[in-house]
Amino acid sequence: MNRRKFIAQSTAATATLLASTHAIRAFGAPEPIYGHNEQKYKQVKGWGVLDSSKYPVNDCHEMVQDRRGRILLLTNETRNNVLVYSTDGKLLTSWGHDFPGAHGLTLAGEGRDEFLLITDTAKHQVYKTTMDGKVLLTLDAPLESGLYDKAESFVPTETAVAPNGDIYVADGYGRQYVFIYSAEGKLKSWFGGKGEGDEHFETAHGVCIDHRTATPTLLVTDRPRQCFKRFTLAGELTEIIRLPGACVCRPVIHGTHLYAAVLRSPNMDTAGSGFVTILDERNRVVSNIGGTAPVYVGDQLQPMAQHTPLFVHPHDVCVDRDENLYVAQWAAGKVYPYKFERV
View (cartoon, rainbow, N blue to C red):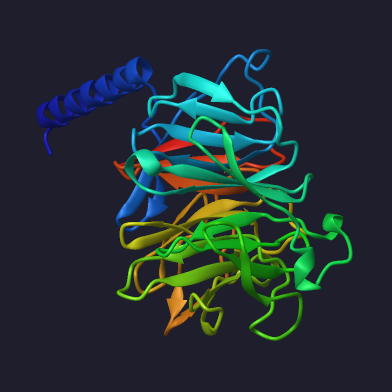
């Protein structure tokens, strides 16, 4: 290469570098992208942050999106148990002062018949409410089952509603039974309970109805055992979805995928280690937000762990109509939820 050509190329390269440097200074570093395969996201900084002196949160337990597109957050802060957001993070309204142990938030019904189910671990009850908080039905501890000698032993964490209106209640912080009630609140049956067999639970933290097949089934979390268990709606175990390294909270179905917050990884003793996991219709993990990439050896998922410290204790994930994610956290310094946009 002659000297003149070398100088010309060097000058062009320097100009390109300076332009890139000015661009980085002007626009900042590229936004980090989280997740794997086709399920990737970027965080929306500052989403949902409010004046904590007026609208405080304690533990942000669960979130849902209603038919009007609003995002509802449940917190165990009794100055405002429910914060209602627009998808761009603006507070629309708030309500609720009577749920000191607010934990599970389930949306059910259709159209004008939408309703909420709220579990309260401190009051040992489950409440069916209107979308603005009017209590329509209260489920007390199922003492008639003969499984409890006092109401305080019943500590419900989650609910799900079947197509026929039956209500499933997981006693996830109590004796680990899943109870089945009629839509009117009459106890019909139960299954599970604490125990070592596959049909039993260590922590039946979450439940949901899986509508992705012609015959709906019930998914139940067994959090310390790092799996979801699939049951018929009558309570017969049919499948175990093992998620090594992921102490998952409730399963959330959206489209063909299953989403879950991972409270801790690789075990319940490892604090500040959570992430969000996403499974496809074959129950294979396809993406982890803040977690290691999913690796399979044959059909065996290899242990997962936190990769990027995005979260402390993620407790729930809500998926909106545009497939953006909202993540609520437990015991995380009273932070407001995080939003992640699909990219």
